Amino acid sequence: MSNTGTPSTDDITSVVIDFLAEHEGVSPDELRSELEQSGRELPVDSLLVVEILTRIEERYHVAIPADREAAQATRSVRAFAAAVLDAIIERQQS
Image (cartoon, rainbow, N blue to C red; front, side, top):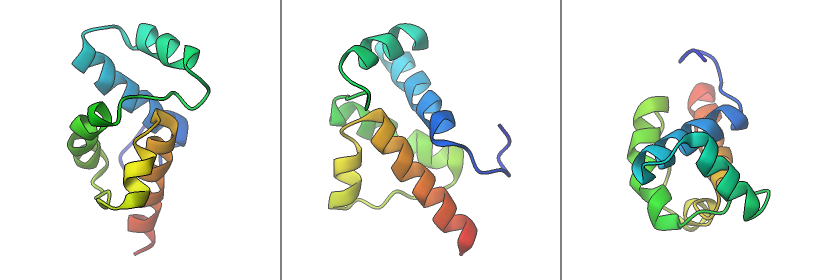
């Protein structure tokens, strides 16, 4: 994926899972499998997602607003990825 194109939600989900796996000291495949067992949305501890928020913002050069909507988005990897994608699209349109 290049930094000039718009990533897909799946691209962002993979990046989030890679960061979470690194933080947890497990393989991305193992973590994805574990999260998938918890449901399609890949639920995750919101505090853990918040820890990687800065890294995601730096990678994609976006700011995720610290509002209620963003807080709700951190409840699952897929919702978080969708929020990141929305921020990327918003930045590209401005």
